[in-house]
Every structure is written in C-alpha cells, then in structure tokens.
Picture 1 (cartoon, rainbow, N blue to C red):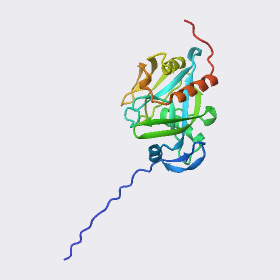
Picture 2 (picture 1 turned 180 degrees about the vertical axis):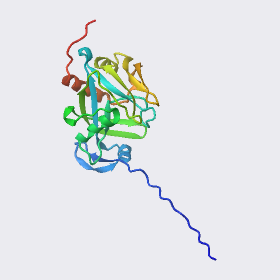
Picture 3 (picture 1 turned 120 degrees about the horizontal axis):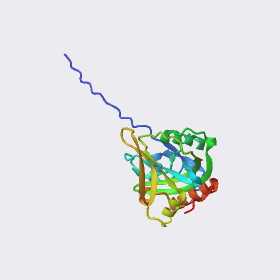
Length: 227
C-alpha cells in the first residue's frame, strides 16, 4: 500500500499597507507609494490637521490630544487635536473623519475654518515625515464631549494660547495644562499637568508659529483678563 505524504503550505499575507500620493516641492502630484517607503525616503505627501480652540472668559485656549502610550511613534506625548495622513484615493474633505475616529467629534467639512497649507518635515529616528499639511480649526464650547479612540488617544488637554506661545519662545520653561486622561478600563479622571517643550510631539517651530498666528487671526480674543 502506498502512503502519501501531504505538505500544507500556509501563505502569510501581510496587512494591506496605506498607499499615499507623492508630491514634488511645488505640490504637484508625481506618483504614489506606500506610507513606509514615503517615510523612508522623505517624499512630500498630504496630511489633515484640525486644531480645536475655545474661548472661556474670552481668552483663547488650544486643545491637544495625548497620544496613547502604546503608539510606536511619540507615545504619551501631546499633539495636534486630530490629524492623519490622506490616502491616495482621499480628498482633503475626507480628512474630517479623523475628528470622529480619534476624539468622537462628528463635524462636517463645511463647519471647519480653513487655516491654509503649512509644509513641515519631521525627523524621528529612521523616519522622515515631509508633510503638506492642510490645516483647519474649529471652536468648541465648554460642554463639548469627547469620545477617545483608545488605540490612538489616551487623554485631552487644553492650554491658554498665550502660555503656549511663551513656552515655544522660551519665555517660560513650564506651563500648566488642564484636561483629562482615561485608564485602560476607560475610566476618566481630571488632571492638571505641568508640561515643558519635551512633552509635545516635536513639530517644527515655524509650523507652530504659523498655526498660532492663523488661529489668532481667525478667532480674536474677546477680552483680556486683568491682573
């Protein structure tokens, strides 16, 4: 009797990787590539950035997300309220999904205030992130309710814009950020946190300066608190 031996080969199929559009210095489309390759070679690609602001007592406040401590890049650091890469088949309008996905805020694209395009390049270990950033802002009210995407965001903080400017300009070494964080079970607790420049994702100084300038132009402060 013949005995047959069967060998089973299992094919390992990697998860589909994001495909982004590649641009030249003049923001002209020149092709597509995977996100990994683009970050390796430092090619220009598009991102969506949305900054939430508020004006309690008439003073401008800017909102930051705290990245999950489990993120590969910049874990547990403060960053843009909501942001993400635009895929090859997406328009800038599609970027509004980041607000819903990351912080549970459902807005239409038309509700956002456009702040224009800002280009910046971030260097992190072997990663070169050359971004053409489509930047927007939106004013939220004090009772705004956030629903965090646990894999991405672990908390939300707010800073007075004047205090953040002083920190960036080295007029202050530390400032107070007020907000909340969530534990692994989703329980939420309020936090007053002393932060320095080292607590923020290291965007270019020119990027932050331009964002602040455009926010101040879009949302003038109603009053200055005295003493």
